[in-house]
Length: 283
Image 1 (cartoon, rainbow, N blue to C red):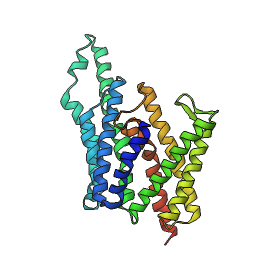
Image 2: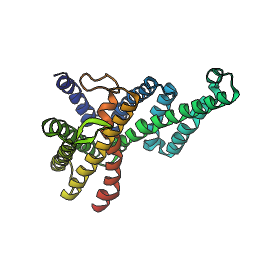
Image 3: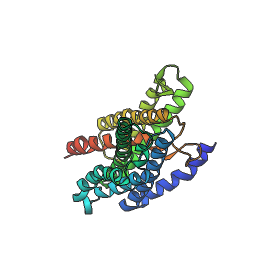
């Protein structure tokens, strides 16, 4: 019941922002999602005993999507490069006194220094790439011609796939899909998800886009396959961090990352498929 109430509250707000808002409004919404998603990701790392620069990573991750706007697109490389360089600066400036002083053995201190340095930098960088960079593609989709319709298209296909996977797995699931990563997911649920995403793509084609039937079919398959890998990838992270949900911001749904994990993989793949294949075939 909580899941239904949350959906009733959040979906109309999302619809209003996407349909009536400008690209900038959608960008602001995406930035909020990225901020919350990065906070949840770094909190999971901390709870799992891993080091990171949480607030530095969040700041860099929120700034990185700014580079995709046309007005500052020439600086995209600058934002990406900064996201790589600055965590190293954080580590050097902050020093390593606390970790190094924990052991009187010089060799052991050096091992601690190396491990902590690698963990801080690599974990921070991974969060920026995983959450911020991948989520930025939904903004790129919104900036395309018919971007509003394309966003609805991918959301419809993704959510119908997720819904079909949930009920298909619950009603018919018998064979485990990836038991070591996500014990609840089944092969039957994955097949239902594929069917749901394809149906969502066909509905999106009929209502939203002038897209060929074959392209809609392939787009639905792409969204489903990569969306399921995105879901499983977040499950892999949560399982390694020993947490059930990434957060609790959405009652009945878990955290923000739990709601957008499929999009993190499906949005980039759909973007490239549409830009490189669908768009060219319509010329």
